[in-house]
Image (tube, rainbow, N blue to C red; front, side, top):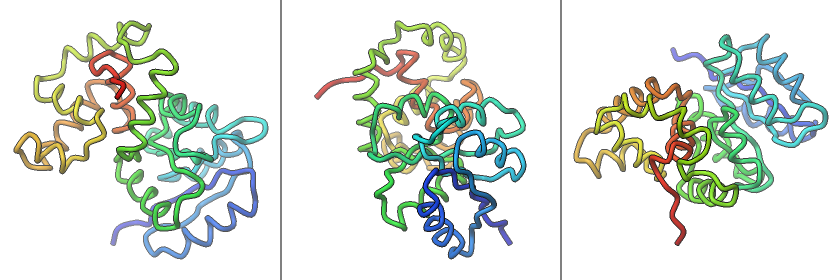
Length: 230
């Protein structure tokens, strides 16, 4: 029997945490293992409970969700913890910073219950919680912040690791950055989804990416993919 997905709820609104707890605990394949009212507490509980997924509000008093996510991502002992940022809007000023900090994706607070539960399962499975619409918004934010040109300090840092990618891995990385799923990439390249997943995993290992969301950030920060305005 597959172990239940362990979830940590981090939000300064007690009422919202209670609602999330009822929803998550109602599912047979997941359970809430802790709650936190601010970022510092979220990190503390994460270290104690080792959740699979943290639902992290970006804006909290004291240590905010962004800082907490960065702390979790920097802790080798929490390498398997996935953070899903909760935002008021699907794309806001902190989204790019969240992904750079190590978040696996983001979800609007107005999401339907089924969307929230699906997000937890997707993140726990190591996939990126980036819808095509969210990816387009992410690219737009990169443009607004002057990123993605391959000319910043991050570009040089990735050049050596990018050189280690095979031609196919680079091709898959570009398609991942475009917001395509493994199935869509497989159809585009006329290969199996399993083959695509293998290429994605190898690209993550070579680039030092925690998950698929980080691949999107690396693709743009390195200049491998350049944002286009429509």
